[in-house]
Image (cartoon, rainbow, N blue to C red; front, side, top):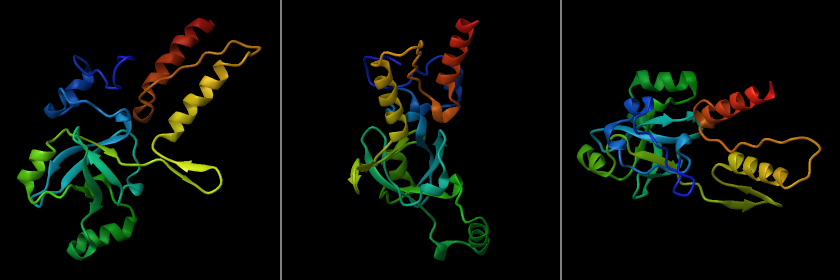
Length: 193
């Protein structure tokens, strides 16, 4: 990543390039790219089929508001309503009580497949539309608080005088295998020997 610019992953000429749909090239990615969704196709009715681009628990996705692509097209995650499901689909949902990513759809208000594909072609990223909200006595909720609070804690520690050496790493890709943290840990392990 270019630390002076937007937090957009550099994916050219990397092995990960081969797994990205062609629509991803030249597209800017959201700062929380590791924990978003990506459009895989559209249904005949104009809904978007999705896949996780990172560690996302499908149990929390139904009814989430989202923004789609660079234009931040509003949408909502849903599933086929029970009255439109086949008997086999109803039995499956009732037996597991959890929908899989394959069963979730994003509604962007498109009237058909062509309009959905024009507005959000395969490879378009989808981000959660989660506002910062304060509630109760000193509580707040918002997107990526775990990461942000972790960074704030490290910054505060770096300002302290400590009786030991402290190595702080601000890394990415936690949701897709902790790749940044693993690399940093191996680099520090070689220095400790």
